[in-house]
Image 1 (tube, one colour):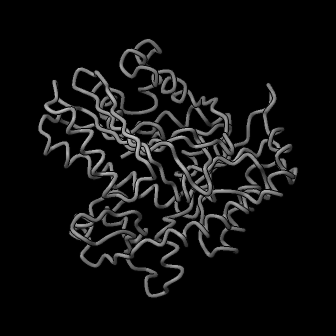
Image 2 (tube, helix red, strand yellow; image 1 turned 45 degrees about the vertical axis):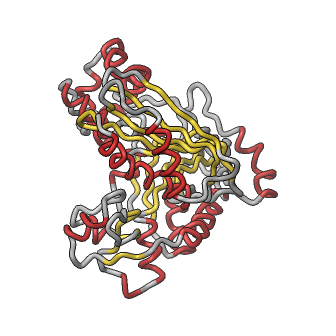
Image 3 (cartoon, helix red, strand yellow; image 1 turned 180 degrees about the vertical axis):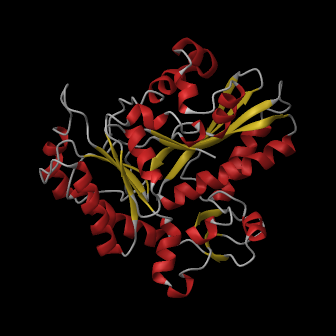
Length: 381
């Protein structure tokens, strides 16, 4: 998460201003999404000149290692986060692996969060390297959100030596799309007049909130673009996508009423994956859990989170869903303990009555020196 806490005195000073950052009925909100460019890898290249211009992967080079982040030089070879290290090395034999330094990333993140806090108290961190900002009403009384985004990017570069991309729009969904549009080191604005038309030609897989499994399901239904999605009725989307149906209905029209939520207490963090083919054997499920556990534990390490309650989520081929939870006397000590408890919970369900189409693991009863943000974060695989 971008900086886990703001300075307490500063929060007291700006909290009242933050509460006022709400658009009126005739005033569109002004939302900025800031996303650092290849954050972990860029920090490593900044601190080690020998890495500049080279394909760099932050993560473990061992057999079961996973790429946590890739430089833009590495991305040209198709390397991305969550990719197995052996696959990444096969794609780019010159790839340089660097062990992650999460303490350093957190310190840089604190610098960036402090810059945000100069402009608004309404900051919703999504991770160490990205956040939403509501600047509808802001501390510097600047009327232009674009100007604020430009100033933030310039200050980030001057104070950290890193580049950030930013998207400006009237809602979170479009601000996120906008920040992706000109990466790296870019700024893009989607105005209220542009919103619906901007969404039309985009592949649904580009939509934040539409993961790979949902993308595949939409594609099977003939929904390939935003325009295709907009052509489907609310009942149709609810029938096929349940409670997410209304969200998809409205974002296809460029509408997203979700507020930017600042300083919410996190209760749990989890990761899950939906499989292309149903799993029936314990060995296959154990293997499928590995990237889920890697993703979850990597996030816990990077965000300084610890928890003592592990929940296994299983969804069967007939869409029946069950969960099993075990609470420990103290925080989960490491990735190995998280795996052990998760597999014990899975073993208790064997043999499964039906094929398994989804597995997920959640860590709750969290404790951290910076417990905040969303009540639950779900990490996409």
